[in-house]
Image (cartoon, rainbow, N blue to C red; front, side):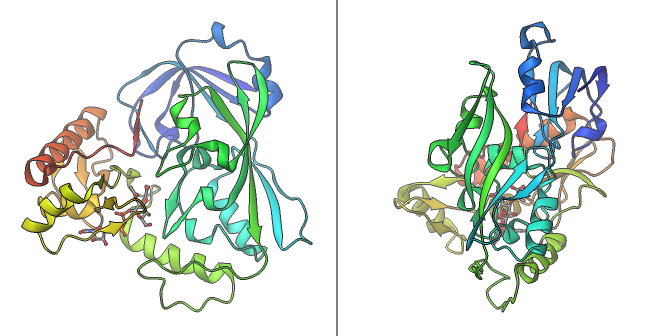
Amino acid sequence: MNRYDHYSLLGHNTFRMPVSCACFIEYDSADELAQLDFDALPQPVRHIGEGSNLLFTGDFPGTLLHARMTALKYVDMGLDEVPVVAGAGLRWDRFVEETCRHGLWGAENLSLIPGEVGAAAVQNIGAYGVEIKDILSGVVCYDTQTRKKCKFSVGECGYGYRESLFKETAGRYIVTSVLFRLQRKPAPKLGYKGLENLQPSSPADVREAVIRIRREKLPDPADLGSAGSFFKNPVMDALSFARIAEAFPEVPHFILPGGFIKVPAAWMIDRCGFKGVREGGAEVYEKQPLVIVNASGSATPEDVLRLEQRIIDGVRERFGVTLHPEVEHI
Ligand code: EPU
């Protein structure tokens, strides 16, 4: 375990906000977590992954914990459905790359998503028609209240669109490892635009196609600071949708179970003319307006917050819809 005081977070948030925290602790096992006296640490205590879905709105006065467990274990390669266990600190895309390399189907549509395995399970990451909940079977945690390890089956994780029990209980459970169930028999999911015509002979083929699509649309955090999609896609009832469709018959939409309708926030933001709009060093990304980027490299949290508010106000005025951030504000 390592502890750092007054620690710069520049390398721990993909938005590259120039902020710091009072205390930063990296640990190597759930047992080390159990040894920590949480009450004695600078408060509040939060856990972070790679910081790829976070906006630090200023210096963090408390303690940030970060997992260094990066093991990846194939429990039984002889089964059709192979159980795989991954440490919470493993980089998500490393997990996808490795499991694809072993010919296992399941994670390939989630290629190139920044972040780590633990945070991916907290956030229920999703892309190109797959969410992590579709391929995981359980999540192992440390419960900061009972101070014991515990395990949740996928059904107990309360998963919804970018939602989970772990998000709802705001830090009570720290994910230490995630159990996946991956397929040895071909199980491609090619319903998403851009993948329909693919005839993959391996999960690596799908991974390659997904990487190509993502590189076309999304900024590489190594080149340009961002936290991926900044807003969630709004889900509305039929009446609210009908009001939008009357004024904008071309509105793209997806019908969800229960009769609800999801409208891409990117389309609304685009329609409001926000592409390329700036507040200080923060900018609405030209190729995918759902993303806010640190265009100058020196954007401040205030720049991002001003731009966020401008987009929310603009979309509300034009469409009567309130966008909610997908990126977590700390
Ligand atoms: N659109 C526009 N103008 C644009 C770009 C997009 O009008 O310039 C409209 C188009 O109608 C397009 C639609 O927006 O069809 C949807 O765009 P896209 O397929 O790129 O997906 P998204 O709904 O904007 C979601 C996820 C992404 C994920 C993609 C692909 C959320 C908040 N975002 O974006 O996830 O990669 O689908 O599955 O659900 C992330 O969470 O950080 C992330 C990048």
